[in-house]
Structures are given as structure tokens and as C-alpha cells.
Length: 304
Length: 292
Image 1 (tube, rainbow over the protein chains, first blue to last red):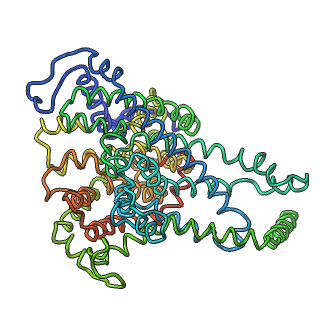
Image 2 (tube, each protein chain N blue to C red):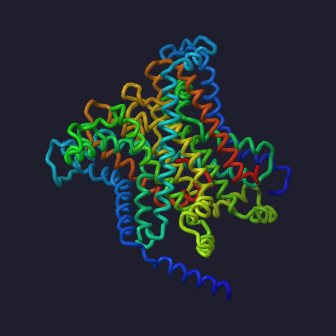
Image 3 (cartoon, rainbow over the protein chains, first blue to last red):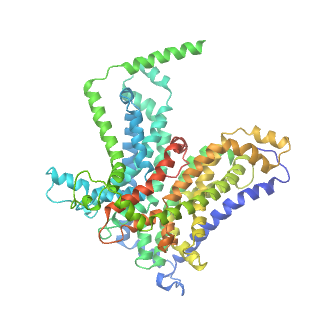
């Protein structure tokens, strides 16, 4: 750290002010306003009149509503838990495959990495767009092939049929979000010290033992950070569900992010929407605090 | 000498490892798996570009099939204001990136080099804004900007884009700054540089690669941002690329050719910018610093 002097305080303040002033204005005010609105019956049509104070009514309504329970379940289970687990398990497995001796000997490591970069560089909105075309009920590539090869008689409306909608949405998310796991884990695997494997070889360890006692412990920290970040990003994501199914069919694939939008801009219930938003932000806060305590503090602890 | 000897023996052992025989069945399985993976990852992207040159009718199976290529889709999206959207996106993202990165350099320099009270709280605040669901802010921001008469104002969106990219830019930049030795700053200050001169003339040139990576990543985040743009821009002529892309879904029947051309145009700059910095991002990610 630099030595203390009189103009230090001024310099520090001057350098921090633009960044933190703007961030505070952008995040704090809307958050407070949102919490305030969640206690009113504010409507999008009556913005000028403002809302009436109704205390905890919005929250009570939510927690007694079985539809809302389904929305929370969809968000936590399908959107977040299932899609994140698939990405972590598959991503780690593919990273192991890409970095394996056999693939390296076949000189396939680089082509595989290049291929994986493509979905990562694709914006989420474009990813949904192209998969919507691939999944399309009448003209999509998958339906064409399935009918052509005689697996099905009638095309499947992948994004409109309750029994296919979550697997289809999760396929889109996995396609778009798998590469970041694959490439990061592949990089992490390269940092495992080689002599550990050699030592294990000398001790006569088989590849299963080598995996559990050398590879896995070394890969675990990176996998944990990725798991946490992916969970936060997916939980917060509005694009995947909204652009692919518009929360449908009906409200079958509704999640918290789309419910905030639907209540505000379709049902015009800004008060209720704010209550849902506050609930959602509180859940995200839990992830954020875990992230801060176990990732940021570990990395920059010396600075704080 | 011993170092060299050890290195040589490791190289030999590695060569032996590489030359180890793998059974033909295993090799074949690996080849098939690799082919499947490449197909799964690459085919949708290849499809975007392929389909963007196909007549729309052939995409829904009614028109002529086979190898017919056309620029019709690109002409179509161009006629529908896509050039305008692209210009808007470039303008908004370009200016926002410059502001965001400059502000982030200042804040991260001080966070990395100076000791002061409440620093932990500042870091905590940054992290929590990174993990905050943006959808929750849509309504309050819309009302706030409507009251200030800033709907359909590009500068309002720029303000949003600067602030949403600031937290992770600062976080990334502190990481890069930590890799630069502190003696440099101290020597410069001893030699009579002002605090600002030290940052400007000593640190900034060394930080350049980190700045490029951070700026690129901010740009990509803004380039594909959808939620804030849709809340703040309602006039078609002011919209950005992602909104323009969504416009092509608006009608009853989707013109897939046009949608693919629009997707291709949205993705191309992202691809070109992304590839050079991706290895840096991978390195930063395991440290938990990148937003994806």
C-alpha cells in the first residue's frame, strides 16, 4: 500500500466518486422504490394517481397462491437446478475428454475448443432465435428429420407441448452455456501438476484412483466458482424463457423473471410485480452473499 | 544442469505416454464422440449463416430446395431499418464503453493501491450489484426515466449501460492491477509524479492489455443487452440490434430468412471481438470475475 499523505483522501474520493455515485444511483434508488411499491396496489394504468398502501397484502396473496408456488418451483428446479447440474456434469466430462491423452494424440483438442467457442460467442437472444427455428413445430430441422426417418408421424411442437417444453428450453440453455464450463474446466485441468500423476503411476494407481485423488480435488475450486456464477446468471435470466416460450404454453413454463414482467406489463399490477421482484431479489441476494464470502473475499481479501 | 536433466527425462516420459497404444475401439469411440460434439456446438451457428443466404420459402419447405443462394434476406433486413439499429447499437455501446472503462480504471486503481475505511463494503456492494436480477429494476427505471422525460433518449440508455458494466469491469481491472508490482507506483511518487500522473504515465501503459480485455467484454455485454433497451426505447428508429432482431418475430408468420440474416449480423461483431480475448476471459473466469 502507498504511504499516507494529506492529499490521499481527496484523491481517493475523486477517483471513487464517479463509479460508486453512478452505481448507487442506478441500483439503490430503483431497489428502494421497488420495495416501497410492493406494499401498494399501484397499477400501470394509474401511475399518476399512485398506489394505495395495502401493507403486506401483495406478499400474503403470493404465498397463498398455488400458481406462484409453481413459478418458484419452475425457477429453482427446472430453470436453475436442472440446467446448471447438466452443464456442470457434462461440461466437466467434456473437458476431461478434450484434455485426455487419446484426444490429444488424435490432435482433436484444438478443433474441439474452437467449436466450443462458437456457442459461447453467440448472444443469448440469437441462441434462442436459431433454436426456435430448429425446434419449430412445422418446419424445424429436428421435426423434418424425425418425420423423414420415420421415428414420428406427426411433428412435435417442442416449445408448445408441456411434456417437451422444459427439456427443449434446457437444451437451448445448455447449448449456449455449456462451452464456458468446458473451456474453463479444460484450462483448470491443465494446471494440475503432472508429477502428481507420475507419482500415482509409480504407486500403481489406476485411472479411477488418479481421477478421485488427483484430478477431481484440483478441479473442484474452479467447478464450485462456475457452479455459483452459473446459478446466479441462470436464476436471473429473462431471455431464455421469455423469447423461447413466452412462459407458455399458457403459463406452464413461467419463472420468476417472466412473472415480474407479466404482472407488470400484461396484468398492469405494478404493486404485485414489485412484490415478486423483491422476493426474487432477496433470493438472488442469498447467492450474492455466498459468492462474496467464498469467492471475492478469498481472492481480494488482502486488499480489504 | 540438473534442471535440464529432469526436463529431458520428463519429455521422454511424456513422449512415451503419448505413444502409448490405445485400442482401436477406444480410438473409434473418441472420434465419434468428438464428431458429435463438434456437430452439437457448431451446427446451429453454421446454420445461422447458411440459412441467412437461403430463400425464405425454402426454409419452410415450400419453395425450391437445393443449392439456391440469395442476398434477398440481407436486403430485406436492410430495408427494415436494420442499418439504423446497427448504427444505434454502435453509437450507444461505443460511447458507453469508453466512459465505463475510464471510470472503472480510476476506481479500481484506488481500490487496488490505497488503504481506506469501508473498502470491504464497497467490494460487497459491487458484487451484489453483479448478482442483482435486472428484470426487477425494469419498472422502477421506466417510471424514473418517464418522470425525467428520458424515454427514447439514447443518453439515458448509455447511463444504464455504463453502470451495469462498471461492477464487473472494476472487478476484472483490480485483478489485472494486482499483477502489477506496487514498487512502480512508489518509485514514481518518490520521483515527484503526482498521484494522477502516476496512474496516467506509469500504470496505464502497463495495464493496456487488461483494459482492452475489459472494454471488449463490456462492449459484448452491452451489444446483446435486451431488457433495459426494451424498457427505455419505444420508437422504432431509436432501437438497438437485439430489439431489431426481436421485431422480426412480431408478425403472425415469421420470415425465417430475415430472422437468420438479422441473427447473423448481430452475432458477427460479437464473434470477431470475442475470439481474440477469450483465453484471457477463461483465465479470469476461474477466479470468478467475468459475467457471461
